[in-house]
Length: 529
Image (cartoon, rainbow, N blue to C red; front, side, top):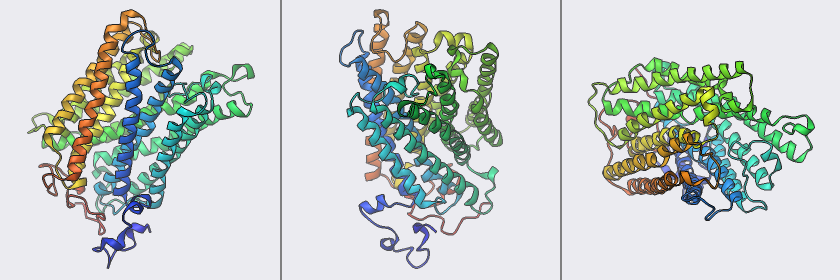
């Protein structure tokens, strides 16, 4: 049994025996709540690092001509911004939520493998350090884009090797985290909680964890092939030696497209928890939500080549991937319909979590529609590698994943800290974020339609006005996140005491334990009726 569960009886009241204090509490943490907290703080730190990268990029793009960055360094920043945000900010944040919430929601005492849980967290700071150090090695960080496309990635300096190792380590962390989450959900549910009684957030994480286990090894394979091409004389992706750089794209996107669903499914789970609470109704169409989540995960495996319409595939291939991509919009539409139907005639109040959830639906749906437009191969050939693409994926990843994470944080932080957050700060954070987000990314659609290519440090004069606007929006958006930091720290330090149930219509096991959630919960499993 894990160290957490050793002292069931006589010492349960005496926390000094229970777990180490000071720095040891965190370094040797085996408790799911502590590990969840570390994941969340780590991901926020990475959000800030990735955000600084983005603001440097935007400062360069404020005016045409080369102002402050060398083009080579600009490409390094582009790449690192992507890698840090995907693997350092969004994914660990969702794993932090899983660690905190999954045991509480299913009535388990902890995660299944407590020590592995600790290990899977501590791999992340190591990987992040490798990535950040790569800026100062000869030749600087990798500049092949976050997709690390061959042949560029085969030709780069040692910064590329550091990125490969960092991604390997993060992948290992993800796989261990997933095994832990699956085992916990399948084996440690409270008596009476069948699969179809699980909260939606738990369902989305169960499905996401399977996705992670399926595709992370594929990424590991792709970047290992780059490594051997670089150092061991193989020619997987070198045409001169009989390889093919396009093969890399196929292997990468076979991981890469399920990966984008790995970053959004838990967000769907959070939104499915928040909306019923503030609409004061049960979630509309629970079982269809479960099936929609599962079908998104299955379909995500057969759409990867829509990232590659311009690489010269046979028309039958284009048709297949075009139709498969359009098909995936159906379960996503079902979800949006169900959320709207949940709100329909509900007694809604708009506290900060609800604001972020409703904001999420609006902006995520828009990101979904631009995705559908790019699913059409002839349109995509025009839009490929322009700012339209950048607009699309920021609408689904920032206004999707990140806004859902904010909604989840405001929703559960009273349970985590025992204090209510400052509603006024929360609302400020929401309105500033949503307005500046749209000022930043909405004009990019037009830049893309007008033909401005992505990942360039310079651009022709005709794009100057919109780029200046986008940069102003980006700084506004970046600074708005400091309001969030302030709100979170203020909430941790104190504030109005939170009740056990926190929200008026909150249902689920996590609302039956005291706020703040005690170090050990559910030592005797609750019975679910």
